[in-house]
Length: 111
Length: 189
Image 1 (cartoon, one colour):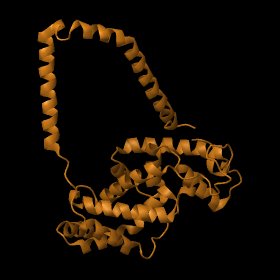
Image 2 (cartoon, rainbow over the protein chains, first blue to last red; image 1 turned 180 degrees about the horizontal axis):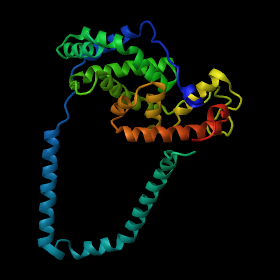
Image 3 (tube, helix red, strand yellow; image 1 turned 180 degrees about the vertical axis):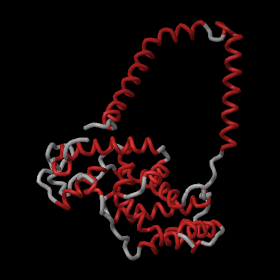
Image 4 (cartoon, rainbow over the protein chains, first blue to last red; image 1 turned 60 degrees about the horizontal axis):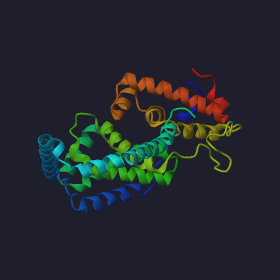
């Protein structure tokens, strides 16, 4: 056994005298609480199915309508706004990277 | 009746609605859970609070205990999950005993500590390791569980556990050396 193992061994405390009573009080309180409301999985699945169906229907409509789906004025407006949207997307990506990098370095193994 | 049999019987009684049966489980396991929390927190009051929370969580989850693993393994895994949640918000404790003197990243900050103080600083240094090394080190070395039980609690293979223990020890030695705990650090394996 080396120094590290010796330092890590033989280290224990005894619970306080009232610890067990405190735990049982907390357990009785927990038992008296009403059961948690279950997560509405049925509604979630129904909502997801509805979203999927709408997306599918929208795609089919868009494919069928082709370039006639949007009026020419709207298309030209979107084309004009594209550089601005590009800058906004770039700013969002940079912000995300700035938020992620410190966490990445902080979770690294080494100092 | 063995301890495992008593635990299984008490668990069945609690699930059937006999709340008082949980008292036997608390009596038999309070020392172990408080000490496990103590080894992660190094603070008695926080450790007892964490252990109480773990018992309540175990009580709520008792219906999921099927007896496939030993009760001790199941309970320790529940407690470890509870401690993880708690420690995630609190962050690691200070490495040294005197917060005015010690910064964990200051080179040689703990130079000159002797005996019990140095041992305590080494135990606290374990808590600064990344979770994938800290938890195996705490369970195996501080909590003195065997390899099979530690692997069972962590839900990893024994080979993976051995690798993490080896890597954790090497990392701990480096950190101890950086902190000036030279007697405890020695040469890296």
